[in-house]
Image 1 (cartoon, helix red, strand yellow):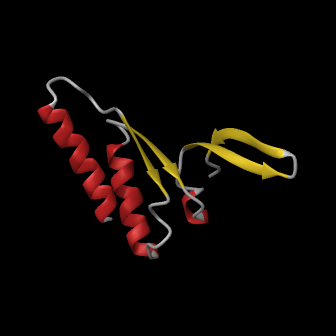
Image 2: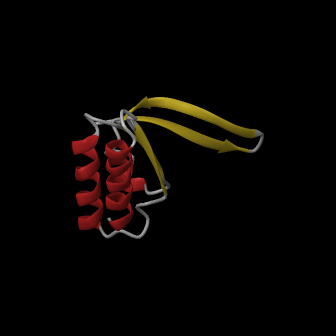
Length: 91
């Protein structure tokens, strides 16, 4: 939670001080693995709220996030390399 707050605060601070620079996207890499269920729900709710203003990319192996991410690109590892699957979350 602290990392998400720090990232959002830094983005807002940079925008305010940089005179016209907008940060329209951010990526969070493995920021959810140590959260309990309630903290994960809170974090995803915060990200849902800011999604209207920014594109948020989440890089994670946490299975509980799969149903909560509305659009995704999944990297599938195979014996001969990796491929991607693009789609929307299943209800």
